[in-house]
Length: 151
Ligand SMILES: [Zn+2]
Image (cartoon, rainbow, N blue to C red; front, top):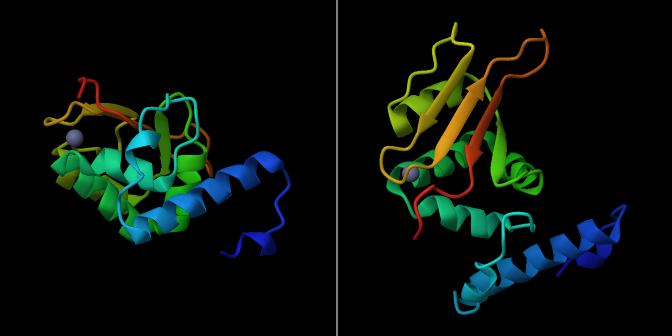
């Protein structure tokens, strides 16, 4: 792999990155060794692959997540996964996200709404939108990594 070329600031990031590379390599080989990684708690770092699978478990959330990745790119998605806090992902908001939330969940986030909370009708994954109070600062959209219901 190309890990050695990278020059990261801390060992921690390097470790996470090489884990991610391993998972990607495994994914390319076949899906054999994935299961053992899925039991980690929410405070530990997850790979983008693991997050993808959690969203893919629900048709609506899978659609939302796949379209988000197409719209904003894998780099944005990976940053969101790395910055995940307490089981919530924060995603950059824009007009396309507004449409995407409507298409995925049937929830309308109008331009003059200040705060919207929603829930996936199928898996009960929660999400929230918060309009920025400061001009120039982006609006915030957060979505839960895991749905509320067990299994
Ligand atoms: Zn869902």
